[in-house]
Image (cartoon, rainbow, N blue to C red; front, side, top):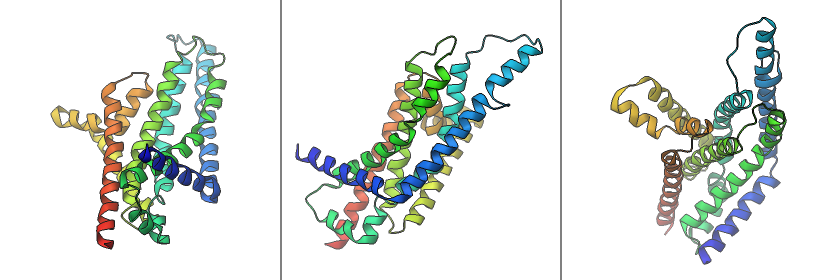
Length: 265
């Protein structure tokens, strides 16, 4: 019960910090503008899915049955999965580096709070803020799916949202660990971006390398498992992979802070 209360206290403090700082609002505004733009491009623009299908129908081209809602969902979340990879390093960069810079990490390290509870609380705080960032997606989807024929199955967009949240939690957890290694938020963001780039390379290799090694890369690829869930396939192994990354990030962060604590004693 004490551990849970500590996690909640850190969570509230971290979440409040995001709503009182101007940078997260700037990031959110840019993210909303870009996601809205891609929504328009994929669905409503002259090059979007609806216009493309209408053009082919006017030309008399035979078209196989197309589930526009499902195809749009896959395309939109594919783009959003790539977009958030550039946003998440900025969100995670100050989780611990600002504490180090301001000298408050020493207070946390010497407090009765466990390293695990602090890490979990911080991760939940930044993840909750991210969830508020993607909340407008519900409006986008309500517009896109309102007149969909055939109607899209509710679990499919639900699983896509879950996939995006798990992807974000995995990257934020690793970014939190990197943030605990430096007192520079900029350095933290850059290093986290390189980690994201490495994970992206793993995904590319998993699609090009055959054999056992290719299967291993495919299994540990965050983007590959993300795409599996976005397609509407509930794969428990994908869920396990995401949670493995999340737990790994929390564990490494706790160990990093413990090393910092030992050096101060």
